[in-house]
Length: 122
Image 1 (tube, rainbow, N blue to C red):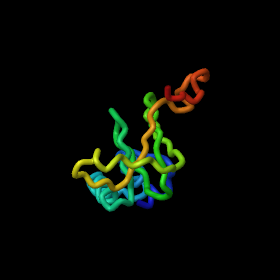
Image 2: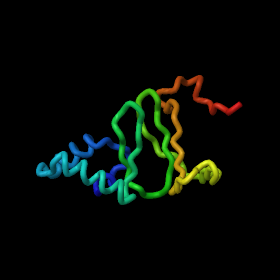
Image 3: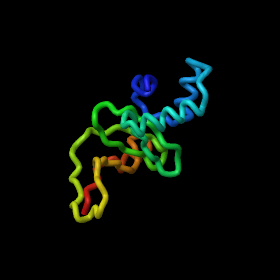
Image 4: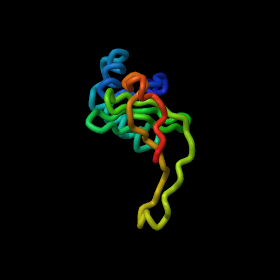
């Protein structure tokens, strides 16, 4: 948890293991993975799923959304704003805890200069 609190990026489990293991070589891969699972279940860490790539982890501090780059897989924080809740009749018997926005596209580094304009929905 201390590692995630000190880093603003969104590291993968292997990246967390390598960083923690440099500080404390007694840490096992299983301990890191088990701790990440427990922290996610406790709601202290958010697991950000990146399609086709390893999940990334984010310490839950201030509320924020995520932008995931289709090309490089980079995960960036986006400012929080309320996302409308779905109509209750569309949920069936599900109980909704929260709505989080994950935007996908090309990050500023991967997007060609001429296409860096905001695309408006038609």
